[in-house]
Image: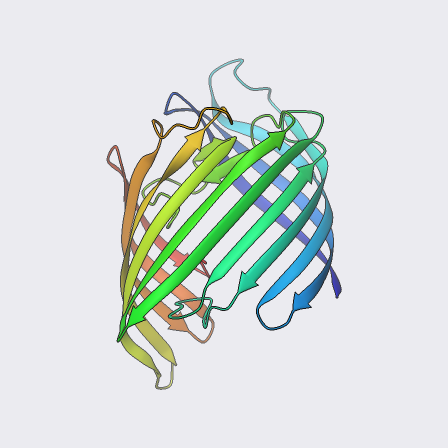
Length: 259
């Protein structure tokens, strides 16, 4: 099977040095991608995607001379992903497992030329007893080759990805993230609105290291969240608070799947 997708996105990316935020860049870009894949029974999928991206990046907050006033964003991306998914729900899974391995090659990035190769993997398993589910997950990624420049690295921050930090607040060449997420079903989907409700929390530990041959957890952080979740006919809704090591806190209303 094959498909063609296009989208436009606008986002802000923070830049940090020695743990301190030194700049924030606004990115506006469009993406066009052609994907070809094959379903592996009812338990998985193998897919390759080739895409183009173009747009601009402008610093919103930056010290004078630290970043140029404007950078063109353009390049081509090729990715191959193998995913195994037997979860019974994408929103609040109770049984099954999910795992994925992806290789991606980018020929140009936000502030670098040449190629950037990366390998990323993830694994998640829920365990359920009555109304309580504990979802445990591991993920990580390494940069294999090239010099991607700022803005092309892996990203952490946001709900369940070091909660308490802003989305995509941290970037780096190599990363790991471990998360334990207990949630309890308060009510099942019924009635006119058809909503199931949950109360949940997460404990997260992860971060980056820059040298592939020198793994270190010295820059890793703890994060966590507490939330009320609603599984509606239009999709999941999460309302809660997040906190990260160092005292950073966020309040959030999140709509959409998080696994």
